[in-house]
Image 1 (cartoon, rainbow, N blue to C red):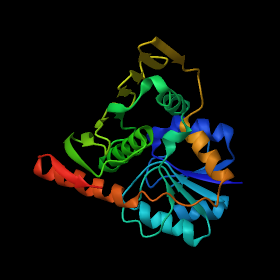
Image 2: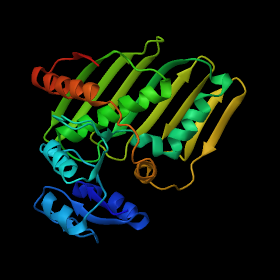
Image 3: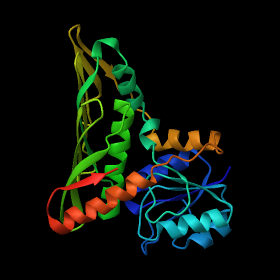
Image 4: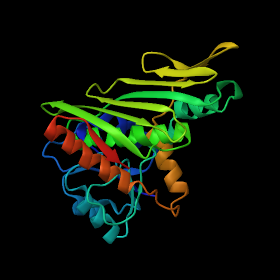
Amino acid sequence: MTIALSAHPTLNPLVGQLAAALPIKGLYYPARRNPDSDLPFFSDLPTMLQATSPRVCAFLSPYADLHNDVHTCLQAGVAVLCAGPVPKADQPITSGGVHRGSPLFAKAIQQRSNPSFAEPVYLRIVAGVQEPGLLPAWWAACGQLFLASDLLGESPAQVHLCANRHGRAYQVVLTATAPSGASVQLVVTPQPALAELTLLGRGGVISASAAHSGIALASTKGTHVVPDETSPPAELAWLRDFLEKENSPSEQVGNSGQALLSGLRRALRTRQPVLVNL
């Protein structure tokens, strides 16, 4: 099955890893500069679709005209997979959920189900944005919210959102209370390599950091560390899962994603915390 990718040039290392493992025949991004990639690069989507005849086009980066390009793919009979919600989307597509392909996420869920961990009390996630700009910061915030919901097994009905920017670098903080009463803090930073997770339960703590080599579970029985061996990017498992389940139903993430985008713009404009109903 032929695959096409759409990705910002900063994601070139990721694109290279994916191209080494999957039949990716073309790379597209609406930018003037040609990324340093061995894949054929196209700055025009219809041209790429005609040249590569893909069965699937995976969008790894957001941009202002993304909804039109998604529509172009669907009109051409090309399946669409999107790493985050689509601004102005008017058709349901499979989007989000990249974290589910991460071995670290699988280990965290496994530790989370340990009876000694008990009920969650507090969750904090810090993640860096891989690309400059407002929409990538929005995608990162959405991704953290979906990750938090999966870890907790529940979703908050609303979040308080704070945001500021310096040039094209954005910092976003979401705070919420889950239906069970667990407190949630999600932080988006401009530093791409930054990634931390802390989940406090009534019986222990699960923690992980980009600076360490595994996930640790601390409880009354001591501390157990699950080492993190070198593993492929989460996007690889995410793409493979979609290819195996091509007719799977789309995830309904559009409403909460659009609400977060509107709230983010409002917080930046007013320079005040805003309440966002999801």
